Amino acid sequence: MFCNSLKIRLIPLLFITLQSKAQKKTLYEHTASDVVTISSRVLNEDRKVYIHYPKVDSANLNKRFPVLYLMDGESHFDMLSQYVDYLSRWDVNVIPEMIVVGITNTKRTRDLTPTQSIINYFGQPDTATVSWMKPSGGGEQFLRFIKEELMPYVELNYKTQGFNIFAGHSFGGIASIYCMLTHPEMFNAYIALSPSLWWDKEYVLKLTDKNLVKASVLNKKIFYSDASEGVADSSSYHTNLLKFDTLLTKKELKGLEYKYKYYPVETHMTVPIVAYYDALRFIYKDWENSAKKP
Amino acid sequence: MFCNSLKIRLIPLLFITLQSKAQKKTLYEHTASDVVTISSRVLNEDRKVYIHYPKVDSANLNKRFPVLYLMDGESHFDMLSQYVDYLSRWDVNVIPEMIVVGITNTKRTRDLTPTQSIINYFGQPDTATVSWMKPSGGGEQFLRFIKEELMPYVELNYKTQGFNIFAGHSFGGIASIYCMLTHPEMFNAYIALSPSLWWDKEYVLKLTDKNLVKASVLNKKIFYSDASEGVADSSSYHTNLLKFDTLLTKKELKGLEYKYKYYPVETHMTVPIVAYYDALRFIYKDWENSAKKP
Image (cartoon, each protein chain N blue to C red):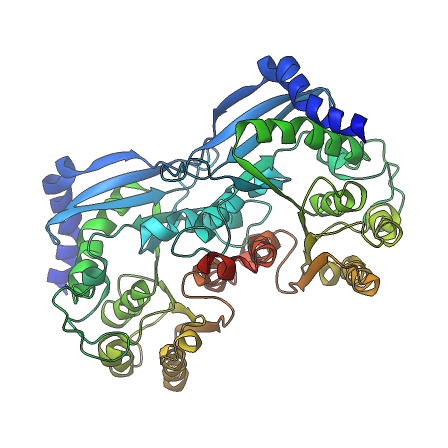
């Protein structure tokens, strides 16, 4: 016992003496990503975006890639970049290599909500002078920024192939759905994790019923999900997702592939980890077979 | 139609002309991680490890952290570092901040297997002169490297708190279980994703039955899982995991918390994404409540 405990104490000492010269310490090199600041005329402010892209393949310099435009870049850019890199590795290969564009926020509520509203999460008017919901309703301008300034920049400077995905969580979830309903020409696929369908008396839910008509969304895919939100706070969060899912099912739109997933054991903040993974797998569910049978 | 298409063509041009001076492009700054090369006397070779650690909290400079020792560092270090950072964020906070030590491979089969064997995945002797299985059986030495050289280095140079996790996938899965069975003093928790229990006629399965006795694993946690392996190739992969799970259940060991999860829709290579997340949540399943009620 004594010997053992002495040995444990001596090992670190011995180690310092004998090994310290032999150790090298350098900084870990992550796959490179860019930080681009775009002076937006549409929004009249500087917008910072993170851009992650596949390593140059010297054997295939003309290779071009889909682009995943991601809202809340400061929160989920690292995760999505990592997923995309890992899942597109030659020995995993269940999705293609991709460019990930993480859009960071300036005025989040303003950009990601489709309407000006002071009705809060619990359906009550929030008239407090300083409300976290103000300003709101800038969604249309935010999409204009993406369409007229961000997308052209990305398409000019990176090897895009034309397939674009729009992904968001919470307010980013309604922004994604709103974009599909109002500007279907911008993206090919949508990810809406725990979308805040409660916003402005279910504005986006009503718009879905109104705008989703035959041929309005040809060759589109959408993945949407929610977590424990509705149970955790007895709100209509989960019911709203079910309503949205029922709407899409009822409309039987040819050309729209959709998938709903409910994660009752995840919270609003943990769900992006599992749901972004499932969303990528859904969008590229046919990738594995198509890639393996060239 | 003409106007529209002209507009689309003009936008990028306009953008270049008017905006190009206003754009700034820099390199994305990831959270820093170290690359440390340890000249191992035990293994008689240089070993490269990646070390990711929480940002310095100026308000709490004495804060110390659990350490996740991860095999196959080159494959899963980025993912685990990202999970740990995201899940320990103040607004997610379902696990503590952690140090992640990714051990990269030199001779993977040698280090991660417990015995010298030439019985292949299908239970047949693999006598080919050049076999991917050679050399094998260096598991004991590999654990000595971790215990006598790597752990002392990490404990001396990083703010460790004494709680250590050992995590591996495939061969790394049996290395993790083997370590729990033979050197339970080294780690507090184990993660074994799709462990290659087939190795050497189910050597680790037999060792589990033999070595797991009362009080041999006090205050330990283990998460193990498998994916579609057994179905995909009609092997005993899944049956082996069921046997391992039955063994742990039958032994009713006080002080060993275990969780088995089966992911039939994931493959051997996709499963780390979902299973490493579930494993971290399992190990820290009581974290949320304990942290929120200080």
